[in-house]
Length: 165
Image (cartoon, rainbow, N blue to C red):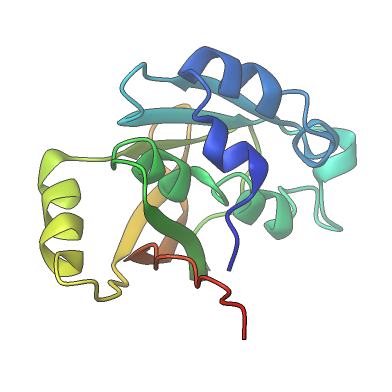
């Protein structure tokens, strides 16, 4: 599996944030990346409540709530590991707890313990599939939805060398 061109670039936090805020799926859904910490260990994302991301009942469309959490744990981890790891989202679930009737936020945190666990579990070349959670909250801190993200992580395999017959 080849890593994408952008994942090999290792953009700065500011440049990645700028680019993500221009990404059409986020713009169209009203998703705004408010902050990416310089060390990629904290990210804050806001979903504005607007006319284009409301459902039939006038609350946040569930797909937009889900989308606002999509790439962040994988991106944060990728930027906190040395080169040579494959990191991608494998699975996710969302539990809707309250109707979202205002702007909502997701605050991602990546701890040194999580990074150390990844290195420990993949030290012998094995894959590791942790599940990490993030809550989507309103401005008052009320939990609107809870999202569990399962990542797929492993050291990259050396590319196979083609030999001549």
